[in-house]
Length: 206
View (cartoon, one colour):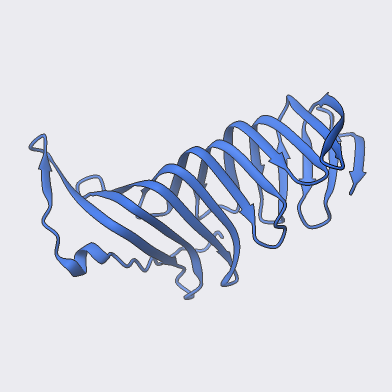
């Protein structure tokens, strides 16, 4: 993801020719109904799609503020993740995505794996997604909680200290343990727990 991207943007409001509204005499705001926008790389690969029934484009700041956000993230033109949130903001020519409030990230290939947080931040030039605040990862086998997590391009989620994890059986918690950093591999469904000196303390497979 370290290539220089050429962003191809589709703005329905430009086609419809909606009239802008002037706010505070210095900022021109454009209301966008039914936003459906795709962002592509310079190789023509789809990076993400954002959908919202209600958004506002700040012409001066070149930002888009979005309500009730749905974002589809793509890898090699294949849908990989679906993210929902209460609101979001696109900035820096739509290269930086910030989602806030009831963020819910779902892997389309692992239907039972769901990652929740208060905030989600991604610069499309980077290969990592940053999640902050009330992180909770849950599937049929385990629950992991922390205040910060990073999801990388290898589909590994790193949960930062302090981490609380709960092992489940038949949808019931059988025990709960606190630990330092934890790593969950979405593909292999393996979770490992590491201390500050990077030594593996525990590794579990489900």
